[in-house]
Image (cartoon, rainbow, N blue to C red; front, side):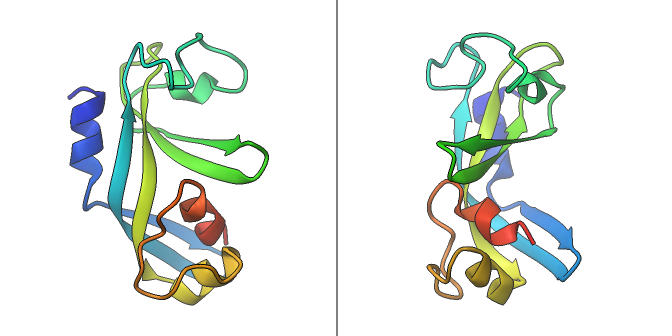
Length: 126
């Protein structure tokens, strides 16, 4: 399964975070693939201290701080040593909705997907 296929495969899957305050979960409704060679991907310029997790085997979480404001959640998509991944862009909240809203500063109404990069992580940081 390549990076684009993984991005499609992840749609509809559930991401879960067991926080001290309880479980937060959401169904993945939007992804974005960053395959090998994509200039927009963090792996494009090679392995660094910051992006080294992106070079782990397929299925690992890669979380990074974007522009100092938002933590973004990605899934590694290639064999170990090859950097590529899938950004989880939006989820449909399932559990812990109140905590997700509070964690995002109250900007997402219940039942609405978390529709911007970083919104997933801000709301589910617990």
